[in-house]
Image (tube, rainbow, N blue to C red; front, side, top):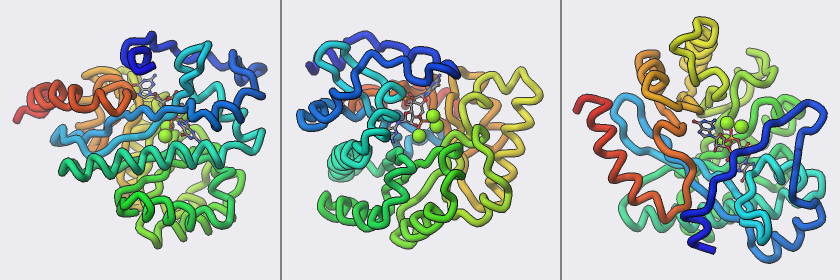
Length: 286
Ligand code: C2E
Ligand code: MG
Ligand code: MG
Ligand code: MG
């Protein structure tokens, strides 16, 4: 299984169409078994500082190590898990593993913020902030090293419940990020009222912005807005050097994307770090 993780083909996510949002090869009724057997694995995608190239954190991205279909992407099962009321258990498994890995990195003197994607359904559960705190305490991880990412388009469907949960999380020093920014319909008022620490510009605006004036203006105004509201900024989908240079010049703080690293199993991070150190030195001219 490990070999398959390391060498297995990375199947690209199938395209999504309006009338078939989840062209899933996996069956809905397989999820309870998969959760019971712990078939879900965490991959991690590094986040780095654009100005310095410094590695500052990872985003946790879940995959299903399916006995027949191999590594299945989250787009094919997160929605199913939500529909079946299983997203809470899935999130718990992903979070626990991320906290255990975080603890391990800290013991190696590696200080990384660990981001976990949170579904709206979990966020609106009343005891969610307490659950997070309990899991982190059990794992011996400081809440300040945790970032919770919530997708913009889902967020605005339930603004009241989420403001409450997000406020309570931030009181516990957990950071919260608004994910896929630009794909939802948040108003400026909502953004002002919801306490985010980090704004992640959706990759559909990032890649290729250097040769497209309208994308560039979306990127620049998102950065301006985040700056005004005191949020840090992350560009998703940095896929090539031109993307990197544009975001760096535009003053974005962090970058994530295939140009830096693909999401990978925890065991591959060491080797990536070595390769990245060389590239980062070159990219930032140090
Ligand atoms: P996301 O949180 O916006 O994560 C970023 C997605 O973009 C990931 O897809 C990542 O692999 C992909 N990506 C990263 N860099 C690049 C790039 O340079 N180019 C391109 N084209 N893509 C890039 P992935 O892993 O398939 O995850 C898809 C979505 O599934 C995530 O979007 C997130 O919303 C959701 N998801 C993943 N893990 C979890 C989880 O544990 N819980 C929940 N609730 N949702 C999750
Ligand atoms: Mg995310
Ligand atoms: Mg995103
Ligand atoms: Mg996304």
